[in-house]
Figure (spheres, rainbow, N blue to C red):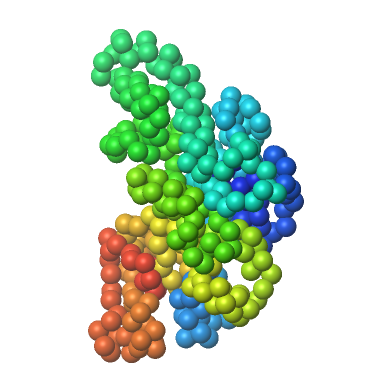
Length: 366
């Protein structure tokens, strides 16, 4: 299962957002380091296509795709050296697939700020520097162990790794995270085991007030974060953690009415979940029938045989073909038979690149 981590300074709303995302009730308070250990929960990705397919086939069960979210303990300047509760932060974030950086973009004199002033760009820099420093620490420890072998054998794997680490070190010391460094496939493989924090895909979450969420034009803090995100070519998602927390206790109809009253098209939670998938280059295909309609997550670019293995290892091992119908076509024509009659039913081989929204029947023999 995909893992995403929510990071941020103290009192930016991480635990409140975590509760909204996972329908949980973890404790938090208006004081620094109110979260001192990682909270872990599961977020289901809402997808109206799943419900429509289930309705079409009268499925007895629907299974949405999901990912695990980690509410990482807050960090401060110096966390990479163990300041605050830095060690808990590092152990919690090391194995996530994506970093969701929650940035405070709302004013509230009653909610403490660790630096006693609201400055989203400074907050972003603080978090990024701690990620960079942590990676530098790993590099500083590794380089001396490689140096002797690298000098003795210029063609060795250690020499290539040594040179690459020096390249990363220079960039990190100039405040450039690894994700912004152009690396070859070979270089990616060389450093894969390091699990560098600044290499992980990143997106920003701008936590705004309820008033600003329905109209962001007057929120100067959000504008600052948006500009930074555009410069770094990353996604920023505006969200009101307080609003999302209130919404989680309403049924779907009441949620829709509540959002309509505020002139909001979609909840921030749904937008965020989709953004995590897009950041990681993930999409969804479906299997559907009377017993079950299920959404499956796959990495963009995977072939039909590989996607068959996501459903079951036997499907991949004995793969014969994939019977594919696009979601839109299946909904438009109402059945697989009608899709066949209208040329919308395709037989694909193992190398067919599965597309988002494909509904698939895998044929196999073991």
